[in-house]
Image (cartoon, rainbow, N blue to C red):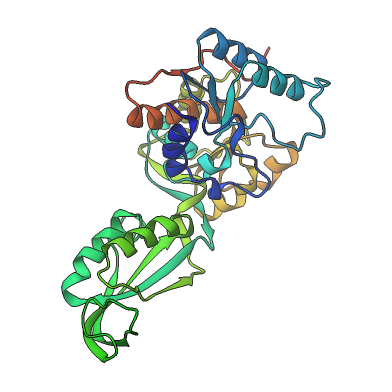
Amino acid sequence: MKLKQIINPLEKFAPLSLQESYDNAGLLIGSTEQEIKGILISVDVTEKILDEAIEKNCNLVVSHHPLIFKGLKSITGKNTTERMVQKAILNKLAIYAMHTNLDNTYLGVNDILCKKLGIINTRILSPKRDLLKKLVTFCPVNKAEKVREAIFDAGAGHIGDYDKCSFSLEGTGSFRGSENTKPFVGKKGDIHYENEIRIETIFPFYKENEILKALFLAHPYEEVAYDIYKLDNLFHLTGAGKIGELEVEMDENQFLLMVKEIVKTACIRYSGHLNKKIKKVAVCGGSGSFLINEAKRAGADVFLTGDVKYHEFFDVGPEMIVADIGHYESEQFAKELIYSVLIENFSNFAVLISETNTNSVNYL
């Protein structure tokens, strides 16, 4: 199977356009035309991961964290990253990363962490803005349903937990085709008035090409009239962190001990007890301290993340507990998530979850 066939469902699940500006997700080493024999999934790319891939006859490593994050000015083996790049190239290993695009997608890293912890009724904690567009098109009344369904199937019409959302308005359209046209209705050279439906719907910008392709295929007209508007709305299906609630409220100690057991960490650093029950929980896998105030505003009883700095614990205040459960620990389930996407699309292909623990932090 060619690498581009494997990349396609990964990028459909977590589009590269959702990654942060500083990130370097996507194909880092290899060719999209490369034949892939097996896939190894990991959180990080380390020399042990590369050795495991070679040993298990996997020539594609799909990781959460990118191997190449900053620009390389040379590949001479003078540091760990350069040595790993050399090793991957020499052994014909392709490297693909799903990083902040997997963090920001609705069913991504934070969603699977919530599921592991039993957090329900979740929503994005900090939704992104400027990702939505509106499509307006016009078609004959008797073709409206076909056009609607085509653009819905291509990814338009999602608002929160609702899909197939649109607005329609009936009116009269006019047009006149030149001698070079083959009009669906009317005669070329004559002005024609047609009873039409105006259809409006919303879509994320990264699905524009697919939606327009579907529109053109379903629409009966030779020339399709349509408008696209950029929207300033928040996109509640994309963004940083997640917040939800426990099915049954828990004591603070009981909750933190449960988290400690599930993420298998030797230590949780937290801001202190508030002597209250835990019901509303916010999470952000990886380095999420930038969301502390957002979690407070959302009314979270506790915010779980990693890489919290000493002085950031002071910012919490008396309303909420901040618990640092570890960077790796909060993102480790990304391996299972990536595996599920690949197996859903390639059930008979060799897809393996790495057995190597790449956590660089140890506890004594």
